[in-house]
Amino acid sequence: MSTQQKKMAHMALPADFKWGFATAAYQIEGAIDKDGRGPTIWDTFTAIPGKIADGSSGVTACDSYNRTAEDIALLKDCGAQAYRFSLCWSRIIPKGGRDDPINQAGLDHYSKFCDELLAAGITPFITLLHWDVPDELEKRYGGLRNREEFPLDFENYARVCFKGLPQVKNWITFNEPWCSSILGYSVGQFAPGRTSDRSKSAEGDSSTEPWIVGHNLLVAHGRAVKAYRDDFKEANGGEIGITLNGDATFPYDPRDPKDVEAANRKIEFAISWFADPVYFGEYPESMRKQLGDRLPTFTEEEKALVKGSNDFYGMNHYTADYVKHLDGEPPLDDFKGNLETTFWNYRGDCIGDETQSPWLRPCAPGFRDLLVWLSKRYNYPKIYVTESGTSIKGENDMPMEQILQDDFRLQYYDDYVKAMATASALDGVNVRGYFAWSLLDNFEWAEGYETRFGVTYVDYNNGQKRYPKKSAKHLAPLFESLVRKE
Ligand code: PNW
Image (tube, rainbow, N blue to C red):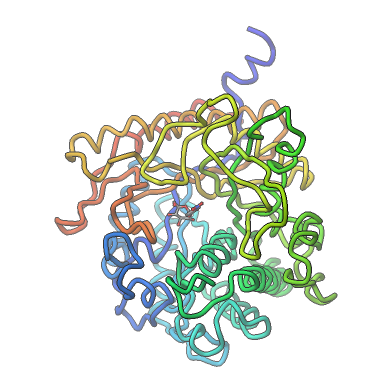
């Protein structure tokens, strides 16, 4: 065995590496009226006919709000060391604003849940906002579009959480601001569903709103991080960061320098849009060039808040695509960076197998590449992979016995985790955690319940009963074989 292979064999991930599963409040909790919860933009959006594939909503979801003990037992059974979940802001402050009352019952629920996780030996990783903005803030001042109010209200909410949940040491401000901005304000596929496409929404401007929303999310993130560092970090001893999503890219034709450039630009438009301001204090040059004054500029105060605001980089990663450059002026609603993405390259090679999600095809080598790309650009930050996983083509239509034998998902995790371990052992990538998406089948946003991502099957027709799939039991031995023992 070569030295490299020896290194690979058993000690590819650092000894303090943590792994577990991830979920989000609106996707699993249900109980939307319980204990004084206020409505969120997803309650409003799912009520509009035609917005969700199967006409469903998060009214019941996995009923996790009422089944915390069951979920913790599942986590334990799978051997999870950590659990990433999100808080529902409007359970804690039903109207959301900084002058609105706090709902102690909501806060108590989460505090008890965190205590129970810790008692079970599972470390909580909390996402403060996973897309479910309090509906009142949307109605009051345009929610995420408001540059003054939103960051102040988010900072207040974050402070309430830091103070009320001192047992939590791992904080994530936002989940995937790209999705909130682009899918919520350009494509209109996610709440609040705004877009220039008048067949989908009476209001919205895809040429400006997503960039304004992205900016406001960054500033709100910066404010929450500053509050944590100023007033909580010392006593709490924890850390805080933001979670960004982005696909790996390959040039459609690697012989064409314009495709090579476009493949890089695609990552800049998806990831560096947020990561450059966080690490460097500026939007990427490629975006400033294409978007001009439609991309907000940071005031000095905003820059000071945002630059240097990550204790770790939260990485959500699922898939890869081939990227083909486009010539000419991009349209005003372009958010990709004047390029096209495909699943086939110029030779007709396919990037990966089809899944139930039109945007997702497994391609583990891309994961290693993107980990390296991020590490080089942002100077080898500490990375937590806060989501990674797959749906399976036709899974929802299979009989339960077949669903429980989810070899496709098991293989996905095996390939992706090994690609990550390789990046850690051979490329110097500083990755310290991995969260499989998801612990449970759950409300998959605009796809409703037809698309399943869980390592646990949830029987929605029979009291949300949970049945672990084969993949649920694969991660513990996999990490056992890869994490160094010291
Ligand atoms: C992530 N896309 O969302 C979210 O953080 C989860 O809540 C979600 O359930 C999971 O991935 C699976 O979809 C994404 O269209 C949704 O590129 C859509 C896209 C990317 C991420």
